Image 1 (tube, rainbow, N blue to C red):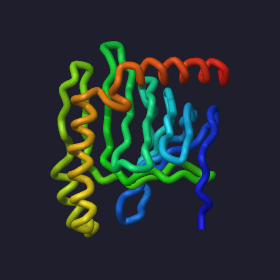
Image 2 (cartoon, one colour):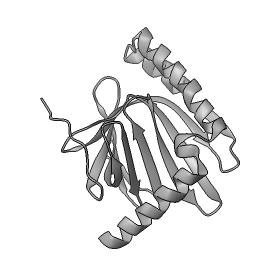
Image 3 (cartoon, rainbow, N blue to C red):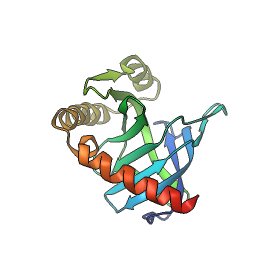
Image 4 (cartoon, one colour):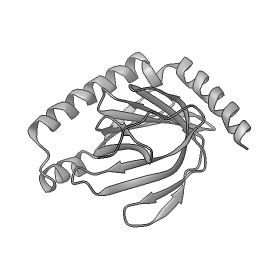
Length: 182
């Protein structure tokens, strides 16, 4: 049994994404913790090595703030590009965290949000395919659909990680910690 832990501010930790069948999906090699509680983890990363399940690797292109919540079935990546903030939202299990990593199950559905505020639900075909392949229970489908609605409301109301103040505060915090660690 793995002991759950709450990462401390400034700690560098991996992020591990799994699929419903328990197989590893993707690993981010390092994320700097900006806030860690039993309910919310906020981290930052920049030019982070990412390893895919098939062994391929790539490096993130821009600084990003990541937002995980223990009660919602999604997480949010806020990516800072020259033309504004883009959000990539993964429909996923709530996070768990141990000494090794922040961990969650990725459930395929994603929402991409553009700097203009427009957004799109992505990967519905992949979701339907994996639902059949991995036998997602009906209650998981209900929870995920409800969380798509919650996420869309947050986007439209600029709540949580979509609030302009959220971006400003956490981007500044990440830059100050990043400079200290350089």
